[in-house]
Length: 403
Image 1: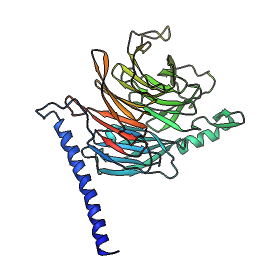
Image 2 (image 1 turned 90 degrees about the vertical axis):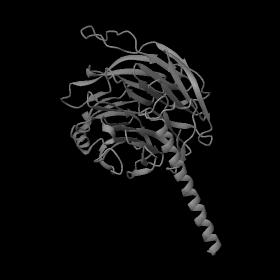
Image 3 (image 1 turned 180 degrees about the horizontal axis):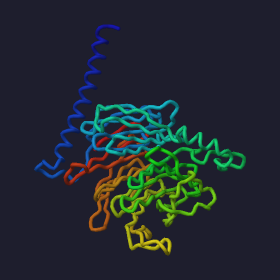
Image 4 (image 1 turned 45 degrees about the vertical axis):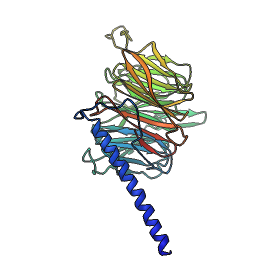
């Protein structure tokens, strides 16, 4: 190349690198200004602090821990970033994994679980919860042990999924769309477009139970209530169902479990909706469900009811408390923290709602943040921040933004 062209390319590269460093500096500065040590209160508005494209395809899932942020995309990669400045710290990749549909972080970032389009769950671990500790793949669910145990049972280990097709009971046969964890019970839950719910024991990653007919259509989201351990499943069949882990009736059709396991999921109550439910978020006594008609249904914990006569009263969510309207198209993602709720939609907008005295109001609307692409994933964080929040968003344009 001519010397002039070489100099031009070098100058452009240096300029891009300088702009990225400047963005990262602004991000770190903005976060520091929101720390409790700051003497001034944060602004009520929102502004984009950092924008970059870590993936070649759309971002489908985000997760956050004390020290790291994670993104999963359609290209099958899971990337991690230092939370302080969003510098990339690791890339998690598995051969032929398919699109990443859900991410779950536990033990302060020591364990990562990713749900994929290839019908499998992958478990990752690292020695330290903070970068630069690297992740390694420790298991793919169902594990080899589960596969062997099912094959030994022969036809008893199979369930009918089509008229002329059967599948192992402990394996999803369609895209796994969601993950949730009950730390008290030591159970990992997975929901799939095959309409089934599965429960995995965290101690040995063994599948304990499968409910093949949990919903009549695809399961899109799962969440576990911090109190009581209730599992919420949101589905395209326009319902949110509530389940609890414990003693249950195993005589139902399409209900399989590991031999010797006495506990399982029991159905508690169904929260009917006028349209398919795409996402769900919990915070304290509040439940938020994003629907395909653009509304966000809100439930609040009310008086306890009796599920079985011999059992003590338990708390459930029954009647819809409110509906947040504003999006013109499907709500694809939702996140809640403290009194802030953030929602991303197919209408290419992100809305921030604030709850005050049991009333919700929209305080911010961000339009065309992701190059006129649907907002597939949002996550809101309040850790160490006074009178404000950090919002991270991922769109189908492959960009990750912090604001």
